[in-house]
Image (tube, rainbow, N blue to C red; front, side, top):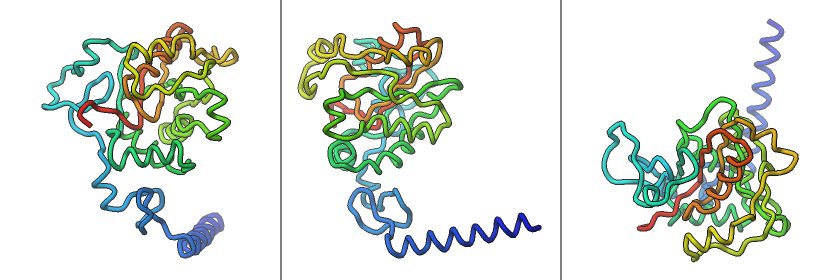
Amino acid sequence: MESGSFIRRNYRIRRRIQTAVELIYPPRCLGCGELTESDFGLCGTCWRDTPFIGGLVCHSCGVPLPGEADGHRIECDDCMKTPRPWKDGRAALLYHGRARSLILALKHGDRPELARPAALWMARAGQGLFHDDMVIAPVPLHWSRLLRRRYNQSALLARHLGLQTGLDVCPDLLQRRVRTPVLDGKTATERAEALSGAIAPHPRRQHWLQGRDILLVDDVMTSGATLAACARVCLAAGANHIFVLALARVAKDA
């Protein structure tokens, strides 16, 4: 009885503290800053304006496709033309509109708190990818960019995704040894050339790769060249199967 009373008393104290905090700092929408009912959420308008991916998607890259699922594996034209070095891939959002604004805020706007709700969206989109004994690893950022930004947004997403799924996270499983140029606007061939030899396993993290499934996490998948480079490095180092999960996917008609 004493234990139960202690728990109830502590719960009431925590609720009072939480209520006081909410009075001083009321929850606001992550998108527009308007008041919301809960922390780390979107208001109704921003939720409607955020392009969440649903329905039929390419099993390899997560881009939405027309039609309905028929129980068979389906891939988009790009993935059929250029097979991916990973097994399956998904994304939570389409990279345009409100989603683009949120990701740019996370990436360049010093808004690391956005990683927590974003990881929740990714966990929902990635259902079916997660396996026991899987390791979550972010796409690495070169040290010079990390010094300027102060954090790797993909590593933040990976950490929160690990909390959501209970899977192991290795934030420095991979290293970006070469500072590659900005890949926006480059062709798939140019992206692949720029990434050649740029990514490698961390020399002290090799044991995390041996015979294990790896889930690679990134904020945005455009052509998939960066994720492909990471996947090939993991496979060459002894990983079992590679899966990829992005916060957002760039679609040709987006």
